Amino acid sequence: MIMAEAFRLGIAGLGTVGVGVVKNIQQHGDLLAARCGRRVEITTVSARDSSKDRGVDLSAYDWVDNAEDLANSNSIDCVVEMIGGSEGLALNLVRNSLSKGKHVITANKALLAHHGAELAKLAEDNNVSLAYEAAIAGGVPIVKALREGFAGNDVQAVFGILNGTSNYMMTAMRETGRDFDEILKEAQDLGYAEADPSFDVDGDDAGHKLALLAAIAFGTKPDFKSLEMTGIRGVTAVDIAFATELGYKIKLLGIARRVNGKIMQSIQPCLVPENSKIGRVDGVFNAVQVEGDYVGSGLIVGRGAGEGPTASSVMSDVIDLARGINVPTFGIPANDLKDPEWIDQGETVSGYYLRLDVLDQPGVIADVSAVLRDHNVSIESFIQHGRDPDQSVALVMTTHEAKQADIKAACDAIQTLNSVNAEPCLMRIEPLE
Ligand code: NAP
Ligand code: HSE
Image 1 (cartoon, rainbow, N blue to C red):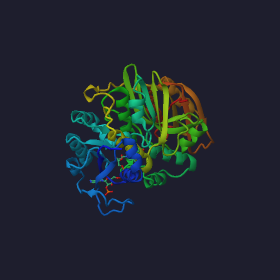
Image 2: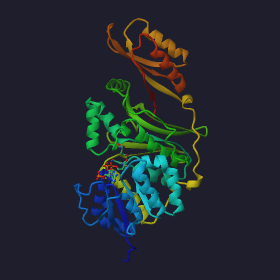
Image 3: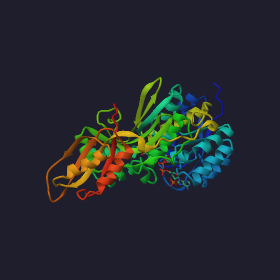
Image 4: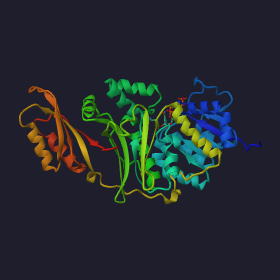
């Protein structure tokens, strides 16, 4: 059988993901050739430290110290950017590679969330692809599912667990009661976390991914800067225990939903029923649910981070490009991407979990209830355990549906009561099935 010329890759970045890609190509050479109709070859690699032992044999490849040189190489058809960061080297490398007519594959959601519209246009202008399956939810093939599999649907919502590190951490906190910092270190050692792990725990990483999902779902330019984000730092062992008692788990959810022609987009820890489909997704697993007018609802679950799963997604892009498949970056021509119109988040409606640290004195519940009443917030249930008149106790309430602006104003007022000791902890309750 005559095969076409090899599809030649230059890989920039040989950390968790880059090394996973090298291993896959070394291990699956014949399988890839059969699937692509041509061999996939690495010609050149680059990282910071050429002397580092990375556990793979790199001797057959050219090494360049400056990753930007990959953009100018005549022996590369596709640059695989596995460095990270929204600016600097990664941005220059991707811009230059596309401009020089090279395909680009990246796992870098930060880069695309900030510069996706510009880079998509650059790819189109140069008749090459900008592929990024690994950038969203690690090993979960959600880009292909949303952009191709569900392409016949008018999509109303896309939401789910988009960060493996924080889901791993909250699962471990719930199951073992161990400390936040200790579990974060474990997630870093497992290769799940970002170079700056505050991106994982403060919601930025999930936000980058949600901005890209919203772009594909709604045909809008990725708009990370307008996104409201709350991470998991404020979620305490006490909240996890109360949520469990109420039949919920706490999940960092990314939600993008079309409401009356506008878009609601948020990243925040939410209570979800523990037996709901998303509630059962624990550990490093991610889950993305798509709601479309023909498919109804579809859920895709898989490992959201780590060497193997992420390399698996990069390889799906490699195979697509080696096969000659070229799909618009965000599903429609870059020039047709619209500026998103956001809804006023204060007008969104939800049930809430509210935990207060209060003095255990007569009249406190009456005072708190009065503030909630004055802000149109109706209490569904409340829990207080134990009794200690000299100490503060946790008072937990769940509410019926309330406007976000109303309950936030109520929290501000509650915080000024003499009997309330600390900032209230407020989380949405998402009644998922
Ligand atoms: P990583 O382990 O920290 O690896 C980063 C690589 O980039 C290293 O090989 C490093 O070189 C190289 N590098 C950094 N700065 C450089 C510079 N100035 N010049 C040349 N090389 C440089 O990161 P990773 O976890 O593989 O993540 C890579 C990308 O994939 C990021 O965009 C990340 O968001 C994304 N991603 C990661 C995962 C995951 O599970 N880890 C999942 C999905 C997406 P040295 O090794 O020589 O220091
Ligand atoms: N740090 C990211 C996570 C990697 O934990 O989900 C996958 O994008």
